[in-house]
Image 1 (cartoon, rainbow, N blue to C red):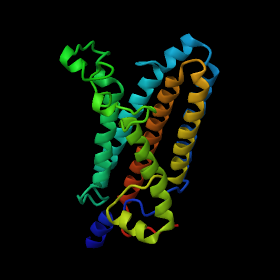
Image 2 (cartoon, rainbow, N blue to C red):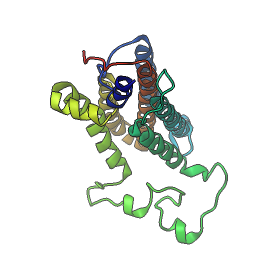
Image 3 (cartoon, rainbow, N blue to C red):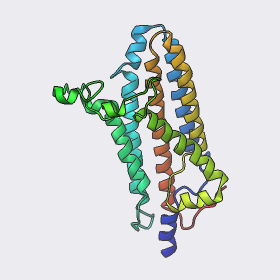
Image 4 (tube, helix red, strand yellow):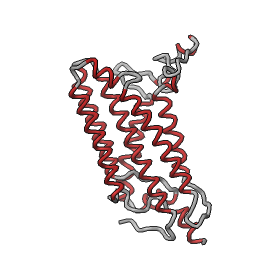
Length: 262
């Protein structure tokens, strides 16, 4: 029993971070399909203002899909956390705190994406509070301190911080995990979930394609829609990662010894 509990505490993502089981292949296909369809639609309708506006405006189709993806990502990580607390024998162990952290973080992202239902429920803000938000919305990421930019339009708002998080956690960390045994041991010891390499690759592609699409859409003055599509795709990527973690957490319930890195 001691070995089982020790295994549950030390093991979360020791297996090859990008192993391609049947379920992983399904996730790859779903994320790639979303990626290709969303950007293809954005490019196809770039000169069709009514359709492009319907898709990419505030409270548009793309924004609601992104909010839903963030919400379900939150639920997937919550399920992974609860699953990580129980072994097949019914023994309760310390769950993976990172799963719970991601569950809270993506629930927050879902709420922020739709301004916590402000327009859905017709909520009105006092003028004193509205003036503190660049868009007069019930959210944090548009508060003036988080939206300031310099003369070149560069700032350190939530969007830039999120981009840095994606680069460090989703792209660099999986590579370091693969290349450095010392880093791998530390990350395993603290139970950091490792993003599959294929998801990290899609993160890079999503960022690069969105940058290109913003230049294309700028000609039609609709470059902001490319940003909405990028955010939606990142939400879907994290939903896929949440489901991936839930699957690994379920598999871990029956482990009695740490699996080897391939």
